[in-house]
Amino acid sequence: MTIARLIDGRSGEIISCTATMSVRDAVALLAQRRIGALPVVEDGAVVGIFSERDVVNRLAELGPALLDSPVGSIMTAPAISVESSLGIMDALGLMTERRFRHLPVVENGRMVGFVSIGDLVKYRIERIEAEAEAMRSYIQTA
Image 1 (cartoon, one colour):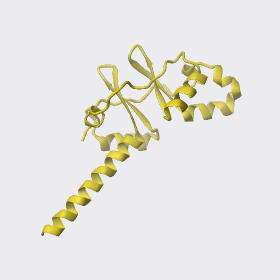
Image 2: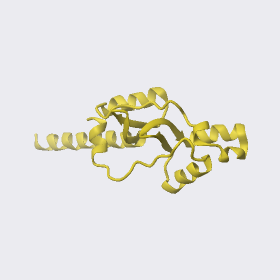
Image 3: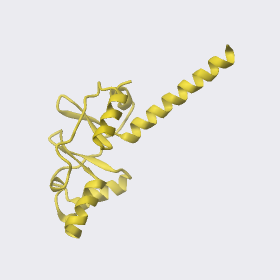
Image 4: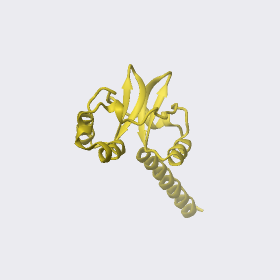
């Protein structure tokens, strides 16, 4: 299965921020939406990822003054992104290998989705459970 099929059923906007937004406002958005990261978007293109990890790492260095800084000064950039045609297992492998948890999905330079490792793991668990149930059914009817 591809990422396109995973994000196909989603409705609503992709929550994002801009590089000029203050860290304070972006952190408030993370807390309000109960999410761990935001794609940083400028003119429809992903220019970085802003995550809880970025805040924690820079907070130790800069202290409370960090909150008044722009997101662009601490975001992870450039963002690694993928096309929606990428397979779920390939995306999981990329995220595991590169040690990040959020992945923008881009088509023709525009972001069309944003997936977390949790989204991908949830899909994988559902597939394993469905395969196990199919196996149980097969065994019971054999």
